[in-house]
Length: 437
Image 1 (spheres, one colour):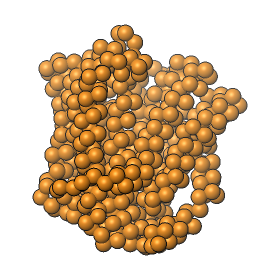
Image 2 (image 1 turned 90 degrees about the horizontal axis):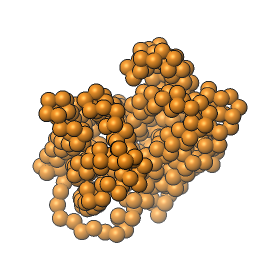
Image 3 (image 1 turned 60 degrees about the horizontal axis):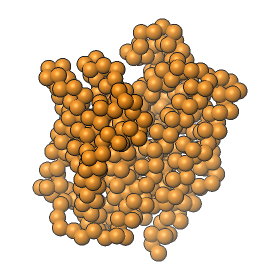
Image 4 (image 1 turned 120 degrees about the horizontal axis):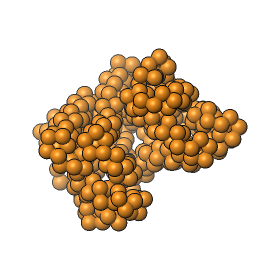
């Protein structure tokens, strides 16, 4: 069972880790090749790119949970039908998003807070980024469906190849051809096309159970996909809210150096967050499949393995930052004072990653067994209920160190509440009973 779990979780986590490098790579190329204004413009557009990723993840996780469930119940045709419907949905969504963002790029970036100097750059980046919305959303979703169709390694390979393409094209477009800020968007778009082209043959040539074909959209299925997948979108939104709330408190407590410190923390910890997310996404098909097969023992076993794996990853990450933290931080700044402050902040903040993996896994587990209301409640606690209260109290009581420890305290409190309110054994038992009836 552990071997089966690792066969899904390791490729998924590695793919997410490599994909997360795109943001850092784009930042390095834009900052050195174009300037700080380009970084600011891309930062303005970033919430929109997170929405794109969230929508693709929402549909693919919601659809993937149903697909794996039906495969586990030996109802393959229903799973194939859902895959085809989700594909049509993604195509329609992508075309609509592209049209809106290309036509209304300037008003959108203005609404997002771009200054007069940044508006032209931000609008140009958004316009070209949005042109590749179709391969971007399909690439994210199809990689998820490859895991549902027992091909997690192919999903990893496609993501790696897309990222390598993005790096090479970024260098060529920015430094060799001097195409400006649009080149970063185009390079990312072509990288997504590479990812998609590697994934497509699996479905076109029917190398697994999932394949393309004619299929009518069913309103009930669409609603169910969105109902189950919504927490995945909520989780992405929660991450944005967490950053926003921290920034507000930091501005009023420490000032600009606090914002700079938190920016470094985010650059370092985004990778580990996505690795932990990758572990949970790797476990999802296994849990959903056994849910369909009505095997509660295996469902809970995979849940526990995912939690243990996430905890071990959190410990390793914390130790690496403790030993090599200053060297890692020095990649982002040469300011010695900022390095010392950031080193302390990163190591305190990293305590949260001993608990975040469990909350991510629990969120995903309730999606996999089709009880998304509990997933939504956990996401709400992580972003708008528990964290802001803990953050304000700790900041007033302990100052800047209180800010850095607040996320760890918040995540631990959420674990305790979830364990008490949503008894996972009882919920699993009830989910199986509802499935049978």
